[in-house]
Length: 117
Length: 115
Image (tube, rainbow over all chains, first blue to last red; front, side, top):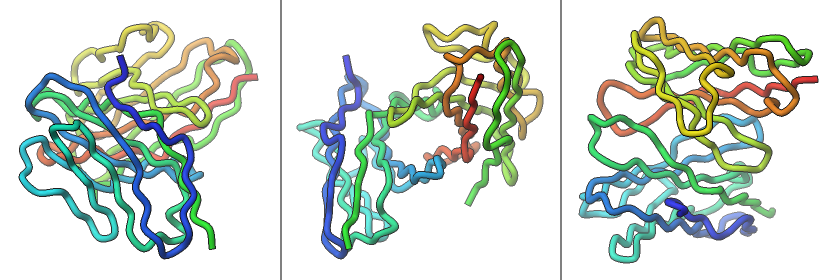
């Protein structure tokens, strides 16, 4: 069964507008972490934002915010004021278990975001 | 922030040859490194977890004799694709974890093309 599901293979957004990239996850572990990474065409993976399962507030990092709905098991990424440089592949990922068990991540299929000028 | 260097960025080789890919943590000691494989426009699939000074832990379906991983020091892990074949052509990317903190840092990836 898929542990991380990203249902949007591709998204378009107008420059300066906000966009939400969907991510749902499946785990029975009470302790887990959720990550979003950006992968531009160069291939490198760029960390964007992290949300821990016990965090009370939604994570924010500059223009990135994570809409964490624990009961629904969703961790959508919101990018505000989109820029042309935001065009990339975006991956949602999950780490299960406590930190001492390692940082093994499971990735979703990814969403390609294209920002239009 | 922490930097992970991966080399080479691109390699083209003949079928049957072996290729070594290096992953270095430049400004921190990485007790654990991870190797991922990514097919075009696909997600990253974890291949193995590499711990310094011990044998790598391979994910199910990954041939340990085909993909040799060595983590000889706290700053270097290598992935050797032995007797490479065209089906091994892929994008390989490593990541390393800090001693503390929640983030994984990724290398820039290696595009392997086997002719």
